[in-house]
Image 1 (spheres, rainbow, N blue to C red):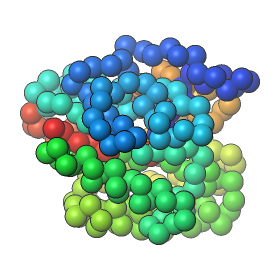
Image 2: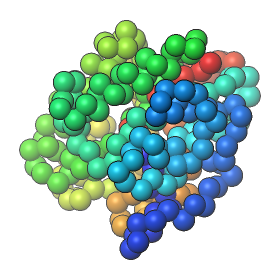
Image 3: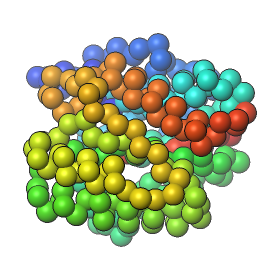
Length: 238
């Protein structure tokens, strides 16, 4: 979800190529590291996933597509929270990583100026395809995570849009994680499948065109929850 589109496999640098579908727009804001609203721009997660090189992700394309299909939607506030290369256990409530606490704090901060949390966009799981134990426990851990987030945001019916993996470190374990993702049984949860989208040369992360395509798929799923409406990575309308 943090976005690795355009990251060079050898030198690890971002090529700084931003497609039109991911360009800045005054109607698309992002919550900064210091919890202030600024005009959103790629790399969306640069301040959040600060120990890795971030490139193009699906967030900006998602917001553009929502506004394209529903021009009356208003201002979209994206709340970047993703940390790449993490396992689902790292996002457990009470984990020493602090990722869960940070996510909830940022989500709540997005409400202070009158926003409304509309959805959680979640794309994670490649790191859970390295060890069999993590893959087998993935479904239970993920369901617990979604349940905790809804409870701590006082939003038991919060729409969740989850991405099913396109890649992994081990094909057998990838299938276990994908099956877990596709088999989560929770209300107000939509699944978007990234399988088949083109990857970068590392054969792990989605390419820039794939990130744009995924963003549009996420928008289509989101608009099924909000068809007439005038936040891995939250979406808040303000």
